Amino acid sequence: MASAAAVSHAYTISPARTVEKLRSLLLWMTGFSGAFVFTEPSPYEIFAAAAIFFFFATGLSIRRGHLPLLAILIVYCFGATIAVIPVVSEPKTAMWVTISWFLAATALFYACVIADDTERRLNILMSGYMAAAIVASMVAILAYFHAIPGADSFLLYGRAKGTFNDPNVIGPFLVLPGLLAIKRVLSFRLKDLLIGGTQVSIIVIALLLSFSRGAWGHFAASAAIFIGLLFIVSTDTRERTRIVGATIAGVGLLALILVALLSMKGVGSLFTERATLEQSYDMGQLGRFGRHILGFQLALDTPFGLGPFQFAKRFPEDPHNVYLNSFMTGGWLGGLTYPLLVLMTLWAGLKGALRATPWRPVLLATWATFIGVVGEGAIIDTDHWRHFWLLAGVLWGGAVAASHYRVEIPRRFATKEASEVPVPSLQRTDRITIVRPLSERGAARLAH
Image 1 (cartoon, rainbow, N blue to C red):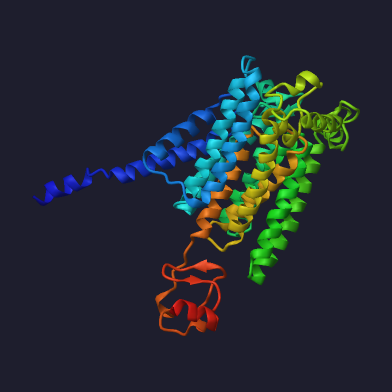
Image 2 (spheres, helix red, strand yellow):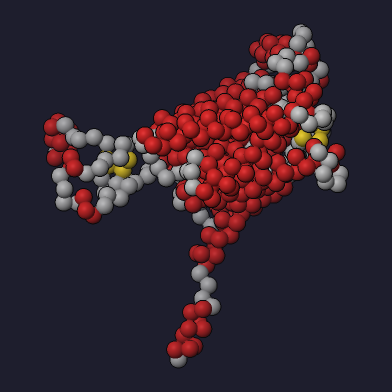
């Protein structure tokens, strides 16, 4: 009998556990597939669609904190839908709008997923993202030095694009994993120093070989913001000292990597060419910045927009400015709601990231990366970057989770006076909300 019971127990399958394992696998694969973007739709769309379907089929709630995001996404996509009607018969226009709706849905999906079981799910998603970054970086590096078969397929104009279709996209994609690797190094544990140091070195080399000026500036600015925020939120003097020391050592290491790369044949000349602030295609009346001015003037006369891919029919190239592109592809409705989405995400994300939660370092890294993407949007179209919507969704989900985060007060403090209990700033316990001592008037209100 005992043996039979043991066998029965060994083969017991928990449906809930199986469902959660499948959820975790799909979430990891969605993060990992973000690096493989050759066509539209890409492998990312396949895994993201499967994850969205499975999560909602097995129970995924939309909280009140998600409603502003939901509303702004619907209005933004509705503007794009109106703008495409006159040109819907042209190639790829309908697909472009469909993918816009889908990417907006992924932002809401991430926001809902991260709002529950936040720390574990964030770790799973970022683990997949990091693996994708390392694979894409290694492919980019090996292809640049022609160390793999078909290397030219992973290059564009002599620049490394890895598993992406554009060198200007792989660089920004690598920023968040680079910041997470920096955070791992800052723990100063030997294992994390070795792993984190290796990760950030691989990522930085690939980023440099993309020869994307925007990505270089993006990484430098986001890293500075992230390290500055870590310094500000830290209350430990020793930890702050480690942050400063590691930053100085890291800058020195990056300088050595840069010197080593520049000493290689062909790298130095292309780096010098790309490092200039002004390129020939930026200047002139119809250059990048001239098109921005003319494009915004055109937007005043086209309240319903031009539709996808129509701007390049009137000008030599695409807008290369996501804020202008939102007017061109979504009319005034899309053009006004896109920057509103950006500002709302920055505000909600910063509020959530500044709360003392176990996942705060990841949110700080995400926020620092997002603000870099926002800035880079002024010189390139980022509205179909998969990781833009991932960053936005993570910030909203982290903010919603942080607003409901609770801290359990240890039993040993249960009998102490309130003034003796260590009080985390603006955090909640399972039973009471800790903010500040009540005034006499506040106590009277509660009494009645």
